[in-house]
Amino acid sequence: QVQLVESGGGLVQAGGSLRLSCAASGSIFSIGRMGWYRQAPGKQREMVATITSGGSTNYADSVKGRFTISRDNAKNTVYLQMNSLKPEDTLVYYCDGVIMTTSGNWDHYWGQGTQVTVSS
Image (cartoon, rainbow, N blue to C red; front, side, top):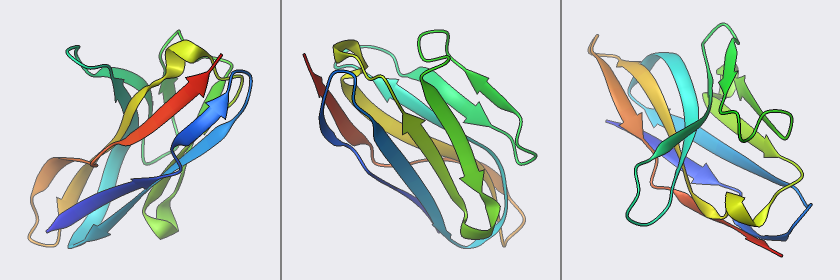
């Protein structure tokens, strides 16, 4: 059993900052790629940023220069530092991870989501 638990969402004014965290726990042997996605009601989930186990990163064009993804492999945690937030960043944010369990199986896991609201 593997769980991803997000924290750090909330309400912030436009131009402000938030830092999201996502901790993986459970029967984990190894963690590969981790990432952050976001979703508006009735729309497809979109990639925000991803990071490999080696630290290579990829960002959506809409957040480049404003958001930074990082990870602490010792803590099985991925972070998303969000600066210069805009009202259009108001969405539910989900973390994901490609994880090998102690049984030797790779699988894809999602967190439960955390709401980010940016007021104008």
